[in-house]
Structures are given as C-alpha cells and as structure tokens.
Image (tube, rainbow, N blue to C red; front, side):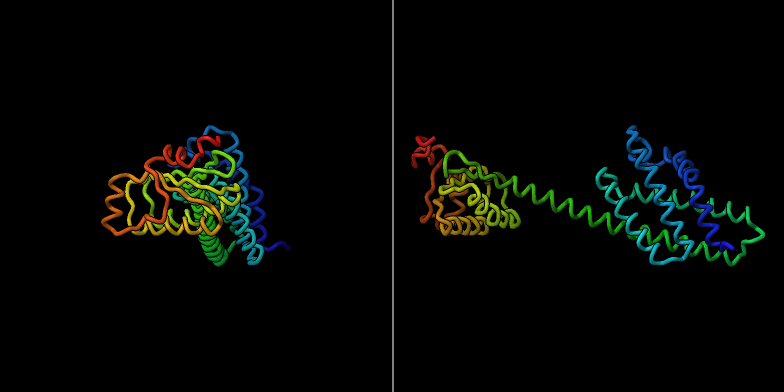
Length: 283
C-alpha cells in the first residue's frame, strides 16, 4: 500500500501545472517587472518551466529522502539563480515571487488533507508543515547563496574588464605603442597597470612605449612610485619608456613632494614625444 507521504507527493506532482497556472494568475500583482510586466513570451516559458521545477523540488521534502532532496535543491538553486542573474532580476523580487509559490503549494497540501480526512492525521499535518517550511527555507538559503556567488563573479569580471579597458596599450607602428592614462589612479588601478601593461606590451611585441598622463589630474607619491615601478619593469623587459603630458600643476606637486623624474624621458605632449623620438617618421 502506498504511504500517505507518497500519496501527497504524487498529488502535488499531478497538480503541478494547475499550481503553476494559479501562480501565473497572481504574478501580475508582483512588484518586480520580470514577473509582472514582461511581454517576452520566452520569459513566460522559462517561468513556467522553473516553477514546475520548484514544485518538483519541494515535493521531494514530503518523501523524506534527504540525499535526493538536497541534490534537487542544489540543481534548482543553480538553475533559478543563473536565470535571474542573466535577466538582472533583483533578489527581493525573486523572494516575493517565491513567497507566493510557497503559499500556493501549501494551499494544495490543504486541499489534499480535506480530500483525505479519513486517512490524514493531525500528526501527518504537523509533520508536513514542518518539512515543507523547513525545506522551503533551505531552498531560499541555497538560492541566496548561489545568487550571491554569481553576482560576485559577474561583478569581479566587470571590474576586470573596466581595469583592462582603463589601461589600453595602443600600437601605432611596428614595436611602438601609446598608453594614454585618463582619470585618477587609485591603488587598485595602479596595481592593474603593473600587472596588465607589461603583459600586453610583451604580447604585442612592443619595444618602445609612450605613456601619456595628460589626462591625470593628480600625481601623489603613490602614483609616482607605481609609475616608476612600471617603467623599471618595462626597462627590464627591454622596452624604452617615454612619459608625456605632465601638467604644470602636477609638475609643481611633484617638486613639492620631492619626486625625482630626472631618470625618465619626459615630454610636454605626446605629439612632441613622437616627433622628437622620430616615431612620426616611422608611421
């Protein structure tokens, strides 16, 4: 004879599409646009498939098969988190939608109880309430954890891209390139200059680099030291380095800070640097 837990599980699975439709009828009231006001039919398809997966996942809780339930939770959390990250859905909107899912599924548990009053005991109801809510809480935990991991990975990738774009080594002729630096240089950006520029120059076969700092408004001791370190690294790699565009106020600040630029070839502008070094004639 099939256990009462198995019967409840099968009832939830058999009514999965009805539960999903009921949830869909309510989603227009959600505050998040991804759920309530999304005209894309592909999104509706995704939501239906993932809602069915949610129902299937939480239904495993009633079977009390811990290993299967845990495995299903991780699959669900990764699937849903990936989808919401890709669609830039705020986590609070997801939690609101899941709260409605929780409510809707439990309504069907109550319906099952009413249809099987002669078989369902108070102890069954209390136990189901416990495993259902504990299971859903774990579901939310795994989702939030995975959502955070994916958000953090995306942010790190974006920051890496921004840093790479902020250090463009631009080849202008055979073995010659320009590195225009624009904006403030903080510790993170200074570190990226040391890591990215020598690698890019090596990959491009650069033997002479023009660093233009006309777009840098502030040069303090840290910035100057990192610039000197970069030039030393490039020199060790056999690359000649020229610095152009040091602004008057930056030059004054450098003198006040006691910074020594005497060992570095400097020019008032990139145009002058290219002209004096003869690079213009090479192009």
